[in-house]
Image (cartoon, rainbow, N blue to C red):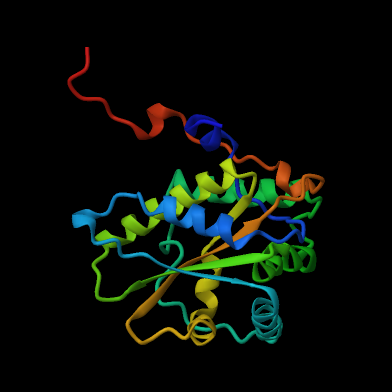
Length: 223
């Protein structure tokens, strides 16, 4: 699989089988992901990988908190308030496509909430990753972490694995900090589910649309 094929195949996987992922494979993916660029080569990313009993205990604790409405204040917003066009429409269409493929109508609030709660089980993935960064870094370093994550997701795709990046975990940043033993200088940026995709799951057939190149690109100086 070449890079173009990995980019075309990668998508957010929201149903996994319980086949374990070997630590050696994860280590190889993480090691190769570190070739990502970062300004001044500061390499600001920190990655925390969990599986097995400790992860299941954490998931059980989060599920109790979620069901009880004990949401923790996020350190930053996942989306800007008053999201504007066309980005507002992109987000709306993505959500509608996801629920439509599951047969969940808009009025089925319970069904949609149950589907959303799958986020906090990592969609059944056997491995969970959390990406953190020292708060003393500037906003510029956030893009460095994003490039690292993109490398990781493409390398996982090449290895036959699936991923789903999850900012919903910002809702439980304090619980994550306790689980990971983070110090006060760390900020939780994102979670990520990792495992082998359930190829029979309808939700994994979802492939969201992308804007056309002319909608986001300006060429200057070309004939």
